[in-house]
Amino acid sequence: MANPKLLIVEDDEGLCSQYRWAFPACQVMLAHARAQAVAMVKRESPPVVLMDLGLPPDPDGVSEGFATLEEVLRLAPQTKVIVVTGNGERRNALRAIAAGAYDFCEKPIELEVLRTIIARGLNLHRLEDENRRMAAAPAASPIERIITASPAMLKVCRDIEKVATTSVPVLLLGESGTGKEALARAVHDLGPRAKQPFVAINCGAIPENLLESELFGHERGAFTGAVKQTIGKIENAHRGTLFLDEIGDFPYPLQVKLLRFLQDQIVERIGGRQQIQVDVRIVSATNLNLDEKIAQGQFRGDLLYRMNAVTVRIPPLRERGGDIALLAGWFLNRFNQEFGRRVRGFTERATAAMTVHEWPGNVRELENRLKRAVVMADGRLIDAADLELAADDDLPDLDLRAARLRAEREVISAALARSNNTLSVAAKLLGVSRPTLYGLLETHGLASDATGAAAAAAAAAATSDTA
Image (tube, rainbow, N blue to C red; front, side, top):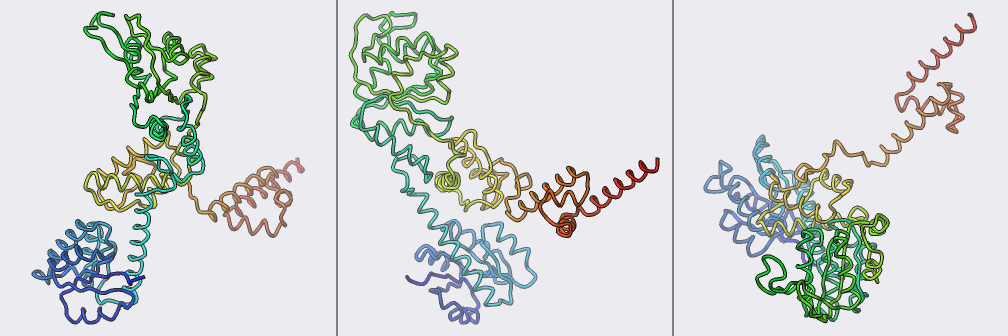
């Protein structure tokens, strides 16, 4: 594999001579001014740029260096720019980091330190490039619009592929925002009806007095305001697929008419007497427990049996393992392109916050939070605050050693409480010797509390004996 490219933007010829041999693992390219540097970035796309902030025509200032930094990052936002500053000019270095630079190095330069910084930059660029390719083409998912590497979700995708080749009714069960409509469309797109209409209707979003007309259509004069014949959604889906979203909210009085259609595939428009034969595949979805609604008398059992020849249960996002990070990266890239932003990734606090968040709104919630964060983020990395999630200070410490110490302290405290601070009894409960228990008490800062309590208990016992 070819050595990675390293662009060095420096007007000092002496330093340029040193740089030529200082990085043997890289293809070193030199530029002495902004225009030359920008041209090389366009032509060569180097993963790392080493840039002096003091460039002509302002070699003693930093205005030209910052202008070059801004233009390089505008052209190649994923490039890792390392700025070189004079001794004592940390303020400019921090300003460059805030503007999007990856790191900085102060003069006089220590080559070993600089080599380490460049190596880290090259490695990070390679990893980010791999992540972008994976997010852009998540090959693990066989269904378009479904991005996943979760075994549970991949099983759902395989089930959808199987049922798509038939015409049996499918019922999709899952929380809001889990991707039910995307899966319903996949049932249509992967089957023999793909070139025919896909018609979706949200049963919970249309008032009951309008839903019947929306589904079955009406004849002219059927009711006040019916000035012309209107074809319903069912007829519009002839030879294709009808997606009944939020079927759990379907009005009970209309369920008989829907059941009759499912049995016979015959439609009668409101105000009409003609029976119209149609050929429609039904895919329905809900986030409600239909068995409970049947028990409450709000949903017909015979209607459910007609709709759920095949039932597919969609896992919530919180049960899909690494899909949170996978989807977050995918949405980040998408919204960067859509809004012309240059957000590079997530802080550790943001990643931790996303990991422990319950995601009640599932993928839709993640998408909306990422959209807002990409638009509103001030820096190059999205923080937990940008996602409006709990900050790192509010999150549990996931370090294993710290977790073990917390658990150990809790168990020791419980043993002391159960033994009334009698150390010999506490040691026996814990299964350790008394010297070991003394050491544990010292480690956890419980020694003074335990010995003090023990002394108090002894004193109380002595007083009781005297009395």
